[in-house]
Amino acid sequence: MTGLPTLSIRRGERGWPRPTTMSALVVGLLLAALLVYPLARLIYEVFGADPAAPFRKAFALPGTGAMLLHTVLVVGVATVCSVVVAVLFAWLNERTDARLGAVTALLPLTPLLVPPLAGTIGWVFLGADRAGLLNVVLRDALDVVGVHLDSGPFNIYSGYGLVFLYTLHIVPFVYLPVSAALSRLDPGLEEASRMCGVGPWRTLLKVTVPAIRPSIAAGALLGAVIGLATFSIPLIVGTGARIDVLAVRIYRLLTNGFPPRTEEAVALSLILLVAVVILSLMQRRISVRGGHAMIGGKGLRAEPVGLGRARLPARLFMLAFVAASCVLPFLGLIYVSVLGRWEPRLRLDGLSLKAYRTTLLDNPRTQDALTNSFVLSLSGTAVVLIVAVVAVNYVARNGGWGGRLLDILAKAPGGLSHLVLAIAILTALAGPPLRLGGGNTILLLAFAVFFLPQAYVATGSALGQIAPELAEASATSGAGPGRTFARITLPLARPGLSGAAVVLFVLMMSEVTGSALLSGTQSPVVGFVMIDLWANGSFATIAALGVVMTVVTSAVAGFLLLGGRKSVSLR
Image (cartoon, rainbow, N blue to C red; front, side, top):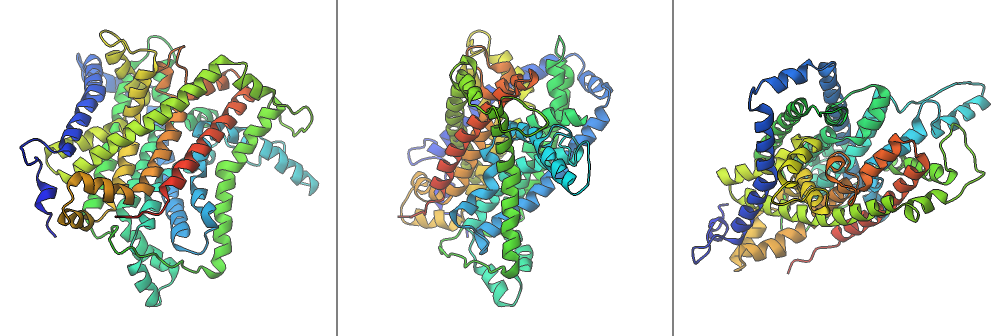
């Protein structure tokens, strides 16, 4: 069906550009000011004399080849595992009788409730080879049956431990767009498949998965971008396992030693950018092939698929994921915080809340860090989500050079290290005439650049599931594009947008790398403070801070997700 004239005209009746075009123009200019200009200035300074020199220096560093291989293997394997787990979870929650009521919808998102930095430290408390609390319990249990171990049996400081934590971290980012697509997918094809005698598992593989293929591709792209940019997990666990990855190598080039090795760091960051561009092209190719289902206007609700004997194993699988991603690391943080120290044995004497009093009442730095991070995360989430919605809406309506350029600008920061972006932003905005260095304003602007790719991909998946026929019906009824977008598109996309808001809030609350350069003494943020505490061995304080972060993010995430899943009434 061809689009109606009101959907394709770019100018209003009086010749002025439409609001969507004006909004996209403002977004494009902001991205040019916050991304293009700072990066162009930095790249000119780094590559101006000899463009090939930074790459020669980067690849001449010891272990560069092994580091790149480790990055591809860890992120690649973790992304594949995350896609499989996320699609299975979304299907179990949205289409089967394995649901555990309203609680089940939150189960795959539990890693978001424990910020990645806090969750990683919690798993170190549990899974360290000798001092890990979970290993201590398992060794004591094995001693009872005559099996004596001096260490292990598990070791989080290993390759499988690194992939395990990456997978736990990535699953929610893949799950959110997939679940949003399934929640609004017309169930007619699935019901027809079952009526033909096809079993539920084959229907999942042959009908459901192809129907939501663009959302799966968007989730996989988002997961891969998240994995490439993840810093806290490889910094803490990868360092102990002696597994170097690209994000940590860039961080060390810029922070270990003086002067910082900016040339090599920027060259390696461009490798990340190329990887993100390739992934984006793959995702776009899958999307434009068509053949996938969209949200239509029929309003049908799928009947739950009966899993029979597989229902109990499915529920146990989901509960085991909750234990691994949220409950166990959170308990590890609580135990170390109330014990006041981390030691390789279990003790229940001398427990106190001293660490919380020190963290929340007696330490102005942690108080300021929590307040700054909370305010920046809330405001940053709102700003970035609005920018992403404007960009996605414009790109979807305009396939010309303007739309393609805005699409590239929105995804480009995902391929660059936050440290490199922070250096570029600091160089461009900290000095005269703006003099924004060391304050919350430059952090807010930096967060908007850092996390726009994640918001853009998640928002594009949510809005991309809305069938054009709904907008066309609204236009036929006399509604303009703005009213159609506000009354039809946004309400239907609300589940996906609320999930994107959760992703953004959690990422901003635990951001470490960029804030290491941009946050001054007057504006500390919680992620960087936790890394500093970890380096100084302040285990009780960092555990208490992790518990407080988990409580805050859980409350905000629950509020956003419950609000996003309310029934939609189109009038």
